[in-house]
Amino acid sequence: MLNKNQVLETIEMVEKEHLDIRTVTMGISLLSCIRADAKATAEAVYDRVMRQAEGLVPTVLALSREYGIPIVNKRVSVTPVSLITAAFPEESGCVGRALDRAAHALGIDFLGGYSALVHKGTADHEAVFLNTIPEVLSETERICASVNVGSSRSGINIDAVRRMGEIVKETAECTKDRGGIGCAKLVVFCNAVEDNPFMAGAFHGVGEADSVINVGVSGPGVVQHALSFCPDADLTDAAEVIKRTAFKITRAGQLIAREAAKRLGVRFGIVDLSLAPTPARGDSVAHILEELGLSVVGCHGTTAALALLNDAVKKGGVMASSRVGGLSGAFIPVSEDIGMIEAAEEGKISLEKLEAMTSVCSVGLDMIAIPGDTPATTISAMIADEAAIGMINNKTTAVRVIPVPGKGVGEEVEFGGLLGRAPILPVHGGDASKFIGRGGLIPAPIHSFKN
Image (cartoon, rainbow, N blue to C red; front, side):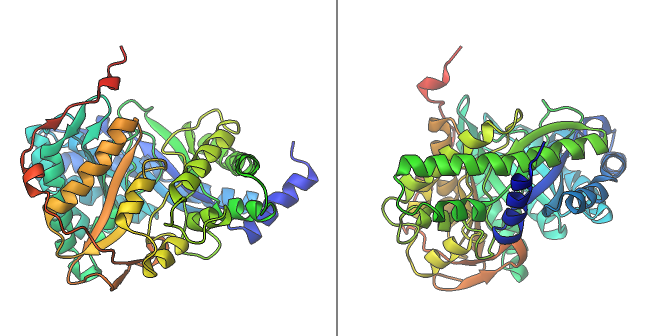
């Protein structure tokens, strides 16, 4: 039972500290939708999503009103589409467009799962499927795509890494009239998880139940506010403050997740503990790191501060929910975090520092704008670097970069909404094309053999 002080504390977190539930995501299996041809499969997919998720938006809006907690996004994730269209991969776009129609009809914000899992090798049908990604992302508004190119158990599929660098460039070119925004809906993973509620990388894994509710919490502003009351605390005590705050944030997510699942008649999946920032002031992961004592995010000490934050968030959140999953930690998307944006504009943070930070946080190089003339092999090398960090450290890493057509360092691209704006960062001028061109598989690390 909540007491009066807890209720008042939650109200203050919502009104003054930007507490929100970032997303309620319904995962839906499409395996039962496979038919003999693309058209029939697309129709079955559309019907399945419409039927299963028809109550999602009304239920989430009702919960937000009843509990007084903003719920920013209503989303759906589905079985990786490459599995559904294996018999007719060249027509996969038909299913992608059907999913986009369903997303519009239901009023959901994004639908994830135009995805492929090629971490140990690329099957013939998956190679064809990958070719459809740029067109689908350019023709649809709410579809998100992801590709898993490596894992700690299998190694890194460099052939797929090479192709994904090319696909990122092709996607940017297909959406050049919108600043390459298609790339903001495309994530390349190592160690992708099956229950991630956050876009653009969400998909519904084949090991999941038929339909589930996964919730992603947020609250960077709440954590920063809590730390502001102990400016002279040592780092041990600061970590305790973050843990206690993460516990409170996660309890709100747990409440919404259980109630949404109950009302929608599906299973409660997980709560993702990730601190997800927005471009709004007072809602920044970068500013948490600065509250810990950094003059600006990106300076020496940033990786250590982020490690402390990420670990404390997980420790506090795990005690608040019996079903923690997804990515869980702290996101550092450049275009979606006002502190990151300002540090990038001032030249205080670089791609190299961001890469170092990804070794200790959730995901990886996220929502980073780079010059439009960056070679595809350089993008592939970025993907390979991030995949290596994920593979060796047994964690999820990813790359979501936007080579902005026609723009270079010193310019900026505006996406609007939660996607924010991004200063274009310089890219190292060295050439990795021969390395990427070797192809093959980077073997799994020795510590992957745990049986």
